[in-house]
Image 1 (tube, rainbow, N blue to C red):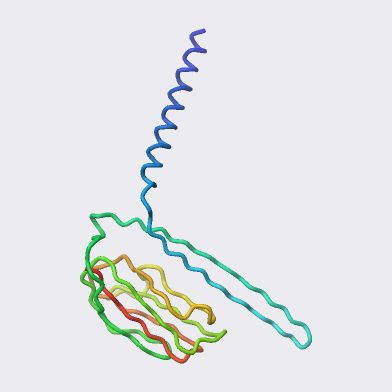
Image 2: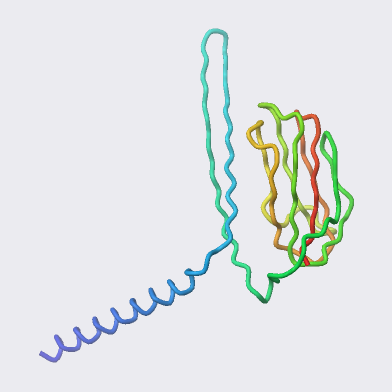
Amino acid sequence: MKLKTIGLVVGFLALLIIVALAAYGAGLSSAPQPTTTLTEYRTITLTPETQTATKTVTQTVTETVTPTSATTPTTGTWREVAVFKGVADKTTDLFEIKGNRFRLTWNIEGANDLTELSIFCYPEGETKIFVGVPVHVSGSKQISDTTIIYSGPGKFYLVILAANLDGWQIIVEDFY
């Protein structure tokens, strides 16, 4: 009889702990979280003489960023820091970020099905480890967008890889 009672008490305590953890977890996730969603569409058409094969690949990546009041100020203004333009691959000059986040707004001119644009952001002196999520566009579905990089203050530069387009422009804005 004692063993049965002990088992019931332990089971009840375990249930209370599970309910408390679930309530605690729900309290943590009740605040809205900023998310960034990137969807990439790629269509490949192969035409060997008389046969045609078409394959469409869709990939969606969602990133959730949880800024805290200690690391990400909620008040400030977006200030233009630099504008870069080109028609091919380019490594930009350094630009200085005063705040702890900045954004890249990019545009493509003359996009077609073969257009490729990739943007990587590196801190000064770094050549291998980039910050933020790199931008990659393939094809002509998307010709402009904005991405926020939660890094700074410091000096940064961009590496742009571009092909099969008439031109691109990237505006860098600092938030402080």
